[in-house]
Every structure is written in C-alpha cells, then in structure tokens.
Image (cartoon, rainbow, N blue to C red):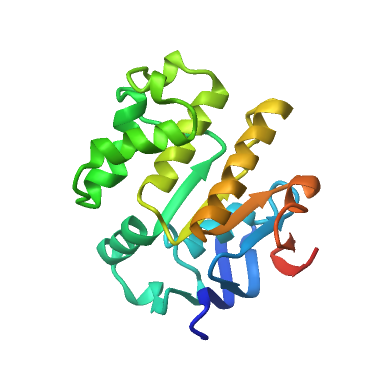
Length: 225
C-alpha cells in the first residue's frame, strides 16, 4: 500500500447461507482508494453495494479477503478496535438519516464528538450546523425538521469529527430532486475543502458522474462503470 492510499481492499468475498445453499454477495473485490478521492460505487438494488460499504467501513467482516484502512487490517482488530478507528477516522451519511429522535439537532451533531472525547464539542457542533445552514434549528428535534433538514444535520454530524473518510449510502434516496442536489453540492464542497475521501454508494449514474471515479458492482463483481 502506498502512502496515499486511505483504503485498500484485496480479494474481498462475502458469502451467506440461504435456504438453497450459499449466496455469494461479493466475489473477489479488489480496490484501492486514495486520500481525498471521490469514488462512486453504482449498481442495481441487491447488487451488494451496501454490503461492500459496510465491510470497507469495518461495520461487517468479509468471508475472505482483506480491508486495510489507513494501513490497519480491520480483520485483525476486535469490535472495540474497529469502533475506535471508525470514531477517529470515519463519517457516515445514510439514506434514512439515522438521527436519534430524542436528541435535538445540536445534540445529534455533538454525539460523535462526545464519543471521540473532543473538547468543546458544543462549539464545534454549532459551527458545523452553521456551515450547513441550520444553526437556527439547533434546538429542534428530528420530527420537527423536513427530510432535507434532517439530512443536512446528518451531513454536519458526519463531518463534525473531521473524518479522513466519509461513506455515503444513497444519501439522496429519500429526498426530492432539488433537496438532493443541495445535499450533494454540500458533500462535494466539504470533500474539496477538507480533502476528505468520499465513497458514495448510489444507483444514480448522473450523481456518480460528479465523482472523480466510478465503479460498478454487478452480481458481486466490481468493474469499471
């Protein structure tokens, strides 16, 4: 692995048992991702995109193969170790927002900062809410926010810890076209400003075209888009 690779995937396979035998979700995936790169992984529903993202992020383990994040083999770490590297280096934006409903917008953004032991978490969280244009909504709960506002809170939460890698799983899937465009503008702007590596999973080829590189996952095989 070179010094500019933030993620390296080698011969990655994921198989699960089903009623008729074994299902191969991923088949020998190889991938290198460089610092500051924006990469789209496209494919139909059920093609294994989310599974690949989960394994690259250390949320799931492969059946075979290796994932190295910032030089560390994730399979050699226990769950606490993988959680620690995620807390320090990784941010997430999901299609379903995944905000905690009993927390305000500010508290949702503060949460990963508090878990990472960041000093002055409130001030930093307020700064990120301001960057996504929602500082005046800091005291509102998710149910009081529109879908686009909730996703902007999720983006602020993802970037608040200034991660090296941001994983985005269909981040505009539950949004209307105009709001989705705004969210993607925000993601790409922050990617450029902070040299954050952006790994985007989507079925939208137009959206993927905004990334520096696009790869397609088809029946568990990763290939050029």
